[in-house]
Length: 424
Image (tube, rainbow, N blue to C red; front, side):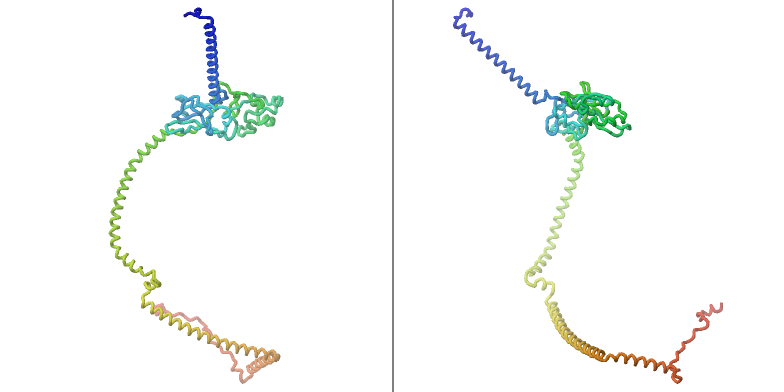
C-alpha cells in the first residue's frame, strides 16, 4: 500500500514514529562515540600515551625471552616498554643484541649518570625474561628539559637573569685531569672558567622548563648535547642473567656428568651395607661370648646398693680386720705421744721459769750494786797485767816463747823418675 493511500491520521503518526526512531539512533550513536572516546582516553592514560617518554638503549648477549612491547620495570613499577630489539652488525664482536626502550614521565627522572643500569632478569620458569632498570645514585640527570646554548666567557657577564643560568658541562683544569667546576653549578666563578682556558661554555636556563627533551648527557664530552629526533638514546650498561631454560640445560649437563659418579657411589654404598651386615653378625657372636662376663659383673654389682657394699667389695674381710687393728694401735700410740709431749712441755716451761727467775735475780743484783761491773773490769785488767809480767820474768820467759816450724827446703824437690828416665 502506497503512502498516499494512508489517511492523514496514519501519516501523522508514522512521521512521529520516524522522528522518534531517528532521535533514538542519534542518541545511541552519540553514546557509542562517547564510550569509545572514553575507552581510548582511559587506555591512553593507563599506558601513558599523553606523557613524555625518554628513550634508552642497552646491549645483551641474546634476546631469549624478550619481545617488542614487553614492559620495563623499576622498583616493582611498570615504567615503560621495549620499542626495538635487533641484532648487531656482523662485524661487531663486542655486543650481540641491541635493545631500545622508553621510560614514561616521571620515571626517567630517576636515571642519572651514576648508579643507573639495565638488568635483564628471569621473569618465570618458561624462559620469559624482563628488562629492569636501577635508579641512579649520583652524578647528573641523563636528560634535561631546559633551554641549552653556548656562550663566550666574555658574554656570560652580560646575560639577562644571570642567576637563572647554570653550567651544562664540566669545566676541567688546563691539564684536563681534574674537574674544577661541575655541571649544574651557578655562573659565579667566571674568572676560574677563563683561567682554565675556556672561550665558550655550554649553559642552560633553569627558569624555563620545556615540555620536551632539550639535552642529553654525553660521557665523551662531559656535557649536555642538544637532543633531536636523530639523536642516539642514552646508553645504560646491562647486567644479564641467563634464562631458566639455559640454566636447566646446564643443570642437566652437570647431572649427566655426575651420573657415573653417582652409580659408583651406589656400588660403594652397597659394599658398605654388606660389610655392615657381616659386622653385625660378628657382633652377635661377640655379645654371646661376653654374656658370662656380664652376668658375673651383674652379680658382683648386685649388692652395691647396700650400705658398705662397695667397701666390702674393694676390701675383703681379713684386710678390713687388719686395717682396724692397725688403726687402733696407731691411735693408742698417738695418745701416748700426746701424753709424753704434754709432760715434756710442762717440764720445759718450768725450766724456763727457773731461768727467768735467775736472770731476774741477777738483774736485781746488778741494779742494786752498780760497782760490780767496774770491779769485774778491774779484776780482768789486773789479771792481764799479771800475765804480761810473768811473760817478762827471767824464770818463766822460756814458757812463753814461740815455737818455730820447720824451715822450707832450700831447693825444690825433684819429682820421682823411672830408672830408664834417669839413665837419659
